[in-house]
Every structure is written in structure tokens, then in C-alpha cells.
Length: 214
Image 1: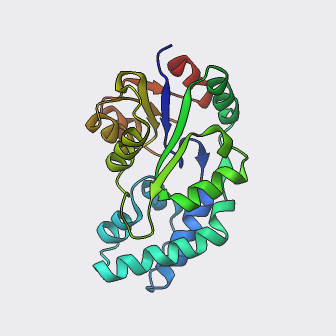
Image 2: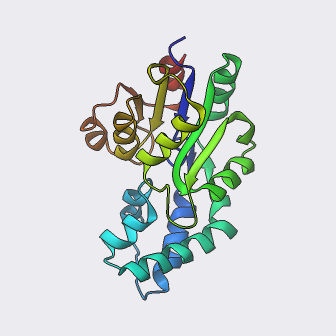
Image 3: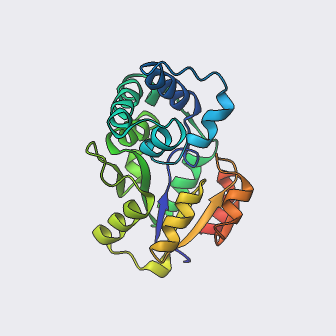
């Protein structure tokens, strides 16, 4: 067996959250009089911590950034989490990993409570040993720290642990924690972005993950 533990990103890897993320961002930005019409702009915001989006792209102050995150989470918790789609074949991948007694966890920059709710909505929560995500106080929001938390809690052998994700933050976080990574091209990171991080594998579809993980 190549791996005993697989860490999955959520947005852009297990689920396609585009509609919910776009609507949540628009809801938050509207509170600051910012109107964003181009949906293509939002694609780059799926994956990174919310604080980074509001602070770096929209140049909000530290206080306004925290307010924007609060507005985003308000909409997402009520509606956005359900404006989400499961990538075709993901449930089969998780079942195949379970059949091989491979432990799975979720490592997401999304608020942990929202991640759990999303997984429960698709009846996927039972597949995961751990769901690790950001906390309401803003801690544990960087992917490197989230991966480190899972490793410290469950102590898997690093040479038998792999991170699967669609953005550079997933690949970079894995490298900084001394584990391998698999980049998925069907999510929201460009091929160029992912290649720069030099993942161990590329997967072009959910079903392609089985070639790598089992």
C-alpha cells in the first residue's frame, strides 16, 4: 500500500463550491459598496484564506477585513453551503479508500463548522477520520498549519501520507510538512500555478485519484 493516510482539500477537490462562494462574496462586498460583476474574478478566490482575499485584493483595512469575513460566513452558513456540487466520482473514490482501510481527513481553509455541514449535506462525513479547518477567531487558517495540526493529532507516517488539492497552497503546505502531494487539475488552480509547486502527481479527474492513492 502506497499510503495509509490521505488529506483532502475540500473546495475544488471534493466539491465544486462556485455558486455558494460567489454569492457569499457578493453578499459581503455589497456591505462595503463594492459591486463585482465578473464571475471569472471569483475563481481565484476559491482556496486561499478569506482574509487574504479581502485584504490583498480588495484592500480592506484589518477591521473591515474581519467584518467582511463575518458577512461572508453569515451568508455561507445559511445558504452558500447548500449552493454546492459534489464532483462526479468522489463518493466512489472515498468508498474505495475505505475498502482499503486508508484513513482520510479533510484539510480546508474554510471554517471547520461550514466544512462539516457541507460534508454532511452530501453524506460524506462518515468517510473522514478528521475534518480540520479554520477557527472563528481566525487561527488555523493557513493550509500549512492545518496539515501540521492533523499530523500532530493523528501521527501518521509521513512517508505514507499525501495531501490532495487544487491550489498551490495545498501543495506548498504539504511540502512544508514533509509529505507528498497530488494536484488535481479539475479544480480552481491553473496548471501553471500547480506545476510551479512541483507536486508528486497530477490527476485530471476524481477517478484518476485511485491510480495515485491505491
